[in-house]
Length: 335
Ligand code: ADP
Ligand code: MG
Image (cartoon, rainbow, N blue to C red; front, side, top):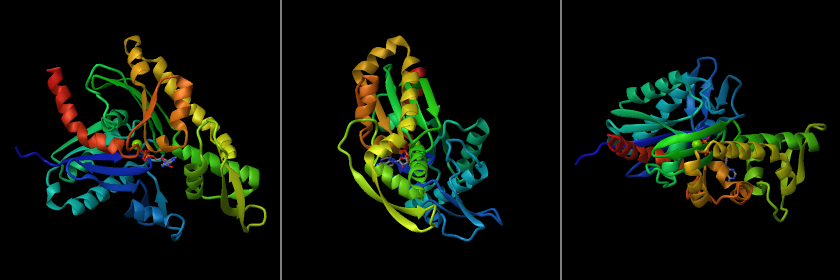
């Protein structure tokens, strides 16, 4: 049996990952594009583009075309996708000939945008192109038995969005998507520090703060961190100390919106499936699942077991790559 190469692409709001069945994750880069505004040309994508942020002449801008979970500029998105495919085919060599590709698209994308993504991949030489919904991919990647008639609950906390879904028998039974994710926490931290300390910090710094001393709404031993930024009054660099309790307060509202989305989805659950949720619980994926204390906090609030996927940042990509066989199995089952 000769099988074609199967490639899964997770087109995330913060990161793009590419997975192949044989080689695992072959590409993992930020979903950032550097564009020359004069010529409208894409100069760089991924890591290279991210490193250009704030360090280039004015006519070159680095943007995240998928930032809010919708495709803000699909020309740029498809250009980015083409560059990504180029990088992957370089890495994999000839084995990329006529691959079967599954792309996980943001849930907010319209049918026109989906078509554009489909065509961009197809034009690149893919044999078969399928699009998959993010929560389904996340569930497959987290090894949940999505093809069985039981409730699989996934909470994917990405950069720009959080998606909550109940999946049973291969389909989404109930779901919610909100435009609050890990990036919102960064934004909250930037605002908090500016308001309370008159200090301007960058988003990279805010993200570091979140990862190091950010906590979900749980009790914990307070930790501190030295932060450097620019004093808004004097214009000079300045260092301050921030505590984890302050950061917890700063991201509180955003955390509560995520919790609200989880609650709303569970309330929509058909009663026949509710029992499964009590037994099997909820699984967290996406980078936000790595926030300190989030598993414990969500579990306390919704009173069902909560698990974090083994590789939360990679679950969607892995699931996207594996989904072809699941899709085929489901189609067989439906016959
Ligand atoms: P997307 O699927 O939207 O591209 P990801 O699942 O890749 O998003 O998650 C990216 C988000 O996860 C970012 O907001 C990032 O700051 C956040 N993140 C990554 N690692 C951690 C961590 N250790 N703690 C808290 N947040 C994290
Ligand atoms: Mg994602």
